[in-house]
Length: 242
Image 1 (cartoon, rainbow, N blue to C red):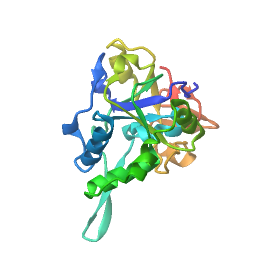
Image 2: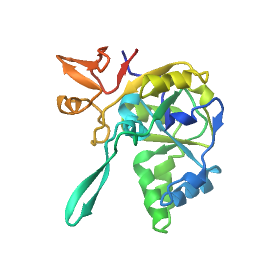
Image 3: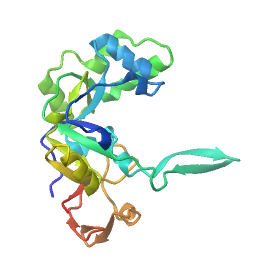
């Protein structure tokens, strides 16, 4: 199945929260270190931001966080001089849905420069006017932002004050149980899509090495076979129907 999407605005969220209606960002649930930067953006834009990724889905999936559905290693710690990975156990994995939209009202931002605001606000520093212009590129039109996102010259993110979930044109979920749950809430175009975890930014291509460690799939020549025996297309996203 072709996992490409003609829709360019993508938002990842817990599947349990996908309901028919609008969502707004909740500042009380923001990561405390990043909250000052979100409030800086609020001062500039007039609304507290909800963040989306923009571009071709296979190229910007890493920006959405959807791959956390399968991320086993979440960090590490040093105990008595020995570094140990912190790994999720069965039952600890999130259940995230990835929603794709044709168009959303809001403001484009250059993801590569957004870290300037994050770092400055976290450290109590000031974001200069020049740095602000690098982030928002006020002279750029919507078409120029979308060209940059599709060409890969700039990783593009997007902020909006509210997101109408009923306008999602496609929804990707991790398994059939979640698909049935969301379809039962009145949503259409819900797909089961699994992607591997790859720590190299922008790359989510399955390799023989990481497929062998993945309980979902095994290798059969140039194909992927799911645990149910269905044949899948090799690619950045692995999608299938059951």
